[in-house]
Amino acid sequence: MTKTAVYKSDISVSACGYRRLLEIISSKWTVLVIYALQDGRMRYGEVRKRIEGISQKMLTQTFRQLERDGLVKRDVYPSVPPIVEYELTPLGDTLIPHLRRLQQWTTDYYSQVEQARVAYDRDSISK
Amino acid sequence: MTKTAVYKSDISVSACGYRRLLEIISSKWTVLVIYALQDGRMRYGEVRKRIEGISQKMLTQTFRQLERDGLVKRDVYPSVPPIVEYELTPLGDTLIPHLRRLQQWTTDYYSQVEQARVAYDRDSISK
DNA sequence: CGGCATCCTCGCAGATACTG
DNA sequence: CAGTATCTGCGAGGATGCCG
Image (tube, rainbow over all chains, first blue to last red; front, side, top):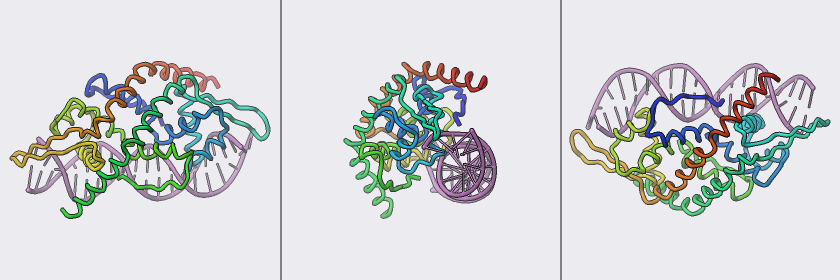
């Protein structure tokens, strides 16, 4: 995981920022986990319940990556049975507004995307 | 490609928007292609030159997907040799500000992510 | 409960070669 | 020049089973 690929040159220096961002939030689960945690501190199991379809392997793996990137903090209470809680760090919080805006984009424009798909598929068939 | 997966329930209706967004820009190339096209109408070969490391297969595939989603328009001039130009649709343009902001986030905070990684890796070794 | 290790598979994506 | 077609690998990610 987290392959530190090296990109030689690029569109411009600017797009290079993009590669870096993708390096952080590339996995589809990453964003969903951050999204789930925006409601505050939460136990492992609860996050899992909130994200339909994620396996414990993927959730753990995503948590480790987010922790490594400094976006999520992990707290372990050495009790039996163990309690592990996760929460966004201040750095992680800075992503929230962006996620909100992207979600708003989807709300505003997704229907257009769907229409475009229908039109495209229709034209492809009668080709 | 474009698997129309059905997600039964979810975090909340809100995160469902996220799945949809990911469905559109999930591929790492998708975003880079949109990014390249923000400078205006462009030929296939030029886009390819701008995106370091993309294969023609992936570029074509990404273009088809973007076209289907109504984010990119494709124009063919039936000449020999063929000239094919691509440009963002108005719908595609609406994504640009978001991409710019995300890029800004990377500029602002990527160093913190790097530091967090160094710290995390250091602690893991001496564990 | 949370999480690591192992096995296995399925599909993304790279490489290569050929066409209008 | 801008594609398609085919082969192949390899790695993300699911399933299962065991541990503290």
